[in-house]
Image 1 (cartoon, rainbow, N blue to C red):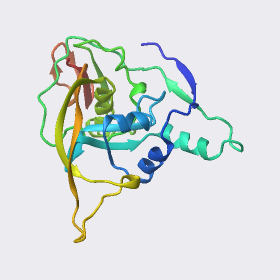
Image 2 (image 1 turned 180 degrees about the vertical axis):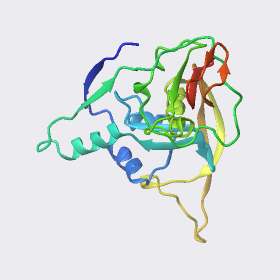
Image 3 (image 1 turned 90 degrees about the vertical axis):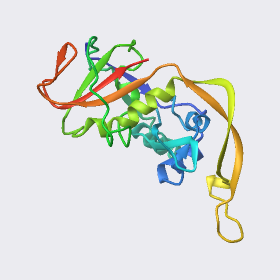
Length: 232
């Protein structure tokens, strides 16, 4: 795929800056989809990443979230609207070639979608059809691609999630102002029952580690790394 770049100027007032700042500080660690969207999940480039493989143990409707480099730049710009010029972010058109006929290896326990770095727009998720894969080799940037790109894949899955119109009831810890846990008189967490929307994923992406010299379908890995595939 040919190289190219497009400059995206960080502008817009539709981002919940207060929530984004709390995510940056670590005060907010888990969000639902609406909160992720308000914090800039669909911003161009994304200001936050979510990890659908790391749900809140107390509330499965909320997943782990982290700020991206673009998100940090956005907050810096917002804090210095006069003295600091508008930051232009280089959005690199994907350099990862899409392949077909490649077979993902079986999933291994302990190498799920955890942690990660890299904005989804850097990779060709939008262009992928079912059966497409791309390969990310081990490098100094990604010494363990399955680990470092796990949340990138989860964020891509979440970007294509849609509400089904159905709801489900979940129990979770009650939170007040600033998403702070509310406690009873004895210092115990207050649990509340809430109705939340049910989402369906219109696309599904998966990631697997691969080993140098091994064949996967019609493709042989020329180095250790990770395969990312659209499976649905």
